[in-house]
Image (tube, rainbow, N blue to C red; front, side):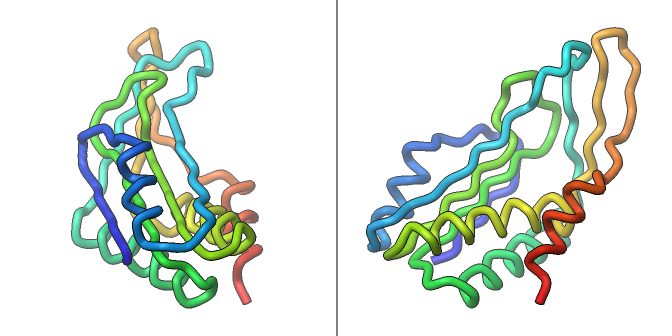
Length: 147
């Protein structure tokens, strides 16, 4: 099972985890990303092209399913204007074994950071805005999964 949701609405971690657990297996791994407070951040705005985003996320999920013995993959990614502390992204993977669940969850997040077409703009507490550039550390993390 692959579930992908992209939109402005928040998600319920418990509900999403239970849906993955319902697909069988004994191991569930998850990651939740939230808007981080750097001391000067008022909000984070995420933009995307829906068709491109859905295609990229599905491809990431399908790759994870082909590489690890998974029962389910859920990816939920929010878009729009978010405040400090708001949830941004949720990845949940389910497998028979913890290694597959944990590794695939990490793979999906690493690929999301570099492959998925999301654009992020920060607004500071002083009203200034800036687009967030891709980080070298994110690229390196994503590249470690390349064969």
